[in-house]
Image 1: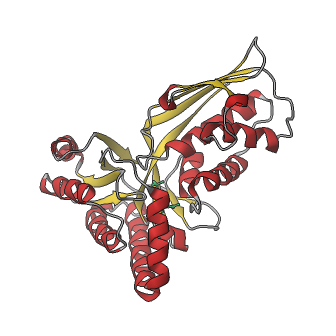
Image 2 (image 1 turned 45 degrees about the vertical axis):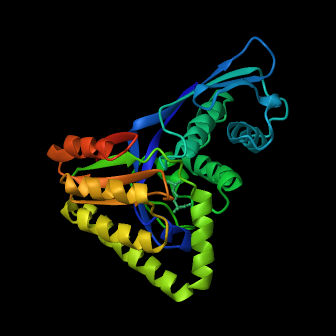
Image 3 (image 1 turned 90 degrees about the vertical axis):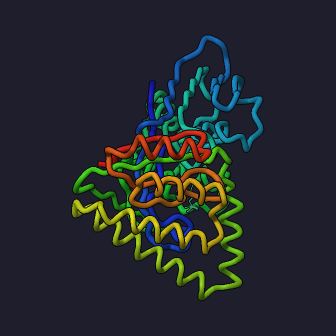
Length: 307
Ligand code: PMV
């Protein structure tokens, strides 16, 4: 049985989303995880996942292993105490710890392929639920935005704990993603924001409210086919993220380089202090903005069309 899941990028609202404000995220289908589950002749569950140098038996992995724990959690959910002999092959083109949702994408594709192979395919809601439980094991207090956008593979207007709202794009638009190549320490940046929020509660609540407004206006602009506004909204969101202390010199450099090369706006995306930034561009200038990002030190760029 085979399954595939896309990467994702947060357009607006990261960090504020942890404090129940809305955020917007979209799937990135230029990168993905493919999982194949096959019956095996030899006993045990053998996993091959070259992107994390994993070639071995499930039983030999520590219980908190990122991939092993997905499989064990699924067996538990399906009441499987003696798993059949399996070969699981995982191939991913999503860079790890870059803010593109690689962990959630592995979990989604793995749960879908494995549950279908075990003749008990889980509906989206249960896949999403289970992946969120697994995200909590590894990331502390995630908002749930990654697992949601990747499970549903659609643009999502996400508010923690509320029913899932996907939305349509009135007119397609182009985003360039630039990767600093520095692993995004999301757990650490989320923890630091929490400490600062406790100390400067009013100021941080105000910043979160301003970010929430931007997410709301961005959603309306996208839905009504007026994405032109997104550039300015991204610039404002980036400034607010700087105030939350989650930008970095490398991210700021890429944001400036994108704008100098003609992007209509840019911001960091995801946990910050590393990982990715995104730039909103006219389709025609996507390649020159991507080139400028590489010249300014980006390790990788992805051009993606939303909608
Ligand atoms: O670094 P990423 O792309 O996984 O995004 C983290 C987004 C935060 O809002 C900072 C945390 C969260 O759980 O939503």
